[in-house]
Length: 364
Ligand code: NAD
Image (cartoon, rainbow, N blue to C red; front, side):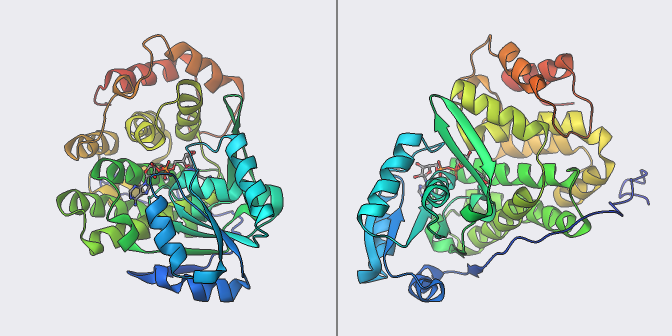
């Protein structure tokens, strides 16, 4: 098989297992108003609404839409789900006799819903307001004494997801861009995942394409619902492939960087992705061909770096707060436990890659 640039491309996987996760998606402008019928659909009568402190007003407005069936609002979600916050919200759900949760927000709020689901089995309706994609995955994470523990359990997979572009027009431009590139990272690593399949390949490529097409429109016109809808459609697809495959070096490094130095999630993904792709794609020609089609450029890593910079995203780990002497610790953690990656990992290669990301160099 020959790729767009005439290069040889490894055939897509001809032996695979494809298992779809249950998903129910309500998509479209103003569809948050359908929450009441979603509660009917799931047989829920008293739900606890979750949000971050910053999105409390939005959450209360959403809760007003289903009146007496809101048992309460917990506006205490924070990044990486600290265990005490999960315990506090879980206790409140019990005290209020809640029979489910509605998570209105990004990955942090949906993550809190998942922690409650894991502890108490309460079903979640997710109303995502970023492009992180957590609503499509059975992956949970809880942070205890500075260490984020993660796992997969289908009980945390939201039963219904409402994608409403109206709720995303308030997402600041900077976070819109980095959150979108966080989604592209899911698609990129799904394309070379050991457990990908032709169906997931299609979803990943289209997800990446939707996001990279939408973000410049969003930067230009943040309240345009069409651009926001395209980005949400991309987030859906990228989240779905994240939930269905095994992630590799990129997600590993971002997890370590976030956990060790408290670097912000979406921004860290944005800075690291071009560097990991420069390293990995020579060993993953099928993924490279899909990303080349999605981005419209054969120099995928360089083009992605330029794209992020032109949209005003950060390009260096240094500006995100990575300490100058932090690289050795990340390398140590990144090579301690083996994991899937299309290219063999060495301490020297990761160190070089991180140094370039730390300094904000354009990958070659
Ligand atoms: P976030 O949920 O932490 O949100 C970032 C900030 O943006 C918050 O202050 C939030 O209130 C605000 N915000 C969100 N949507 C907004 C909107 N529409 N308008 C105005 N403000 C808005 O950020 P995130 O990047 O979505 O989530 C990051 C977290 O999610 C991390 O902890 C990450 O590990 C986790 N995550 C988990 C999965 C999974 O599958 N489990 C997937 C992706 C991310």
